[in-house]
Length: 125
Image (cartoon, rainbow, N blue to C red; front, side, top):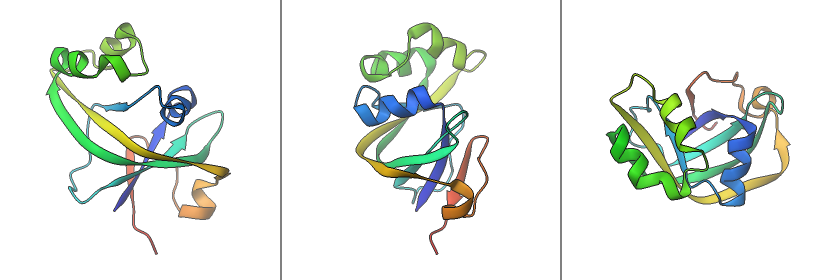
């Protein structure tokens, strides 16, 4: 099963150039059959630019999460702590096997979805 994640373009690009190996989330999907993330690069790109497989999902308190992921977080420590402000724990999706599309896809046309605020399940036809 696949999930579509909205990711800021600067972070989406880091995923595909290999400098960001963790995608952080305040909440995570409940379905444990999700194996692939479809990357929707949000504004100003507004297109699906690729996908990646999930190595594992780490759920820890914020300080431990940063300690485990900081080397390949693709973000600054300040940004990390601002993102998780007022949270006791968070999630880090460990990325493996990235696949950047040669031609970006339209979320509405190709997937019949609208940009998700957090995530959207994609049930392949």
